[in-house]
Image 1 (cartoon, rainbow, N blue to C red):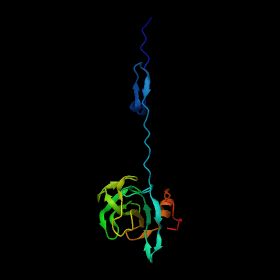
Image 2 (cartoon, rainbow, N blue to C red; image 1 turned 30 degrees about the vertical axis):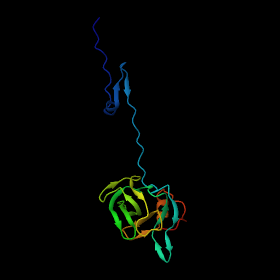
Image 3 (tube, one colour; image 1 turned 180 degrees about the vertical axis):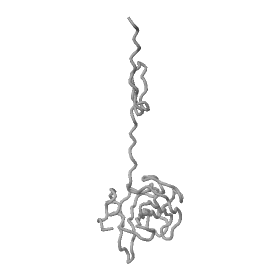
Image 4 (tube, rainbow, N blue to C red; image 1 turned 180 degrees about the horizontal axis):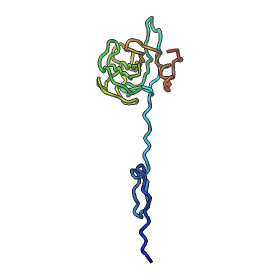
Length: 177
C-alpha cells in the first residue's frame, strides 16, 4: 500500500493568525479581544457642584457663565477634549483655565484655588484641570464656567450648549444659546 502524504491543514487567514494561538492540547485558541470604553466627548466640569447663579443679567451686568458651588478644593475637569490656551491669573476670574476644543468653541473655568493644567497641554474630557476656589472677584467658593463661540469674549449660554452636547447642568432654565 503506498504511503499517503499527511493531509494539509487549511491556512489560517491573516486576521486569524494575528489573534490565534495554539493551546497546550494543540487546539486553536483565540485570545479574547479587549473592549475599550470610548472616551466621552463632553462631561460635566464639576458634577458635585450645585448651581448658584445662571447665565444672564445679574446685579446690572451680564453674568456670562454658570456658577457651580461645592466644597473648596473640589476637582474641576475639562468639559471636553482640547488644548489649554491659558492657565493662570485672569482679570476678575482669579486663577482660570481656557480650553480650545478645536470645533469653534472654547470653555473657560474661573475662580480656581489651584490649577493642575498648563498652557499648551492637550487634555481629554474628564481630565482634572484644577480645584474649585474663590479667587478673583468672587463671593465664595465656586466654579464659574463659560462657553465661548468662535473666540474668547463671545460667551453663549453654557447650560443649553452643554445640554445640546449630552450633558445636563441642572438648576438653570435652558435658554437659547
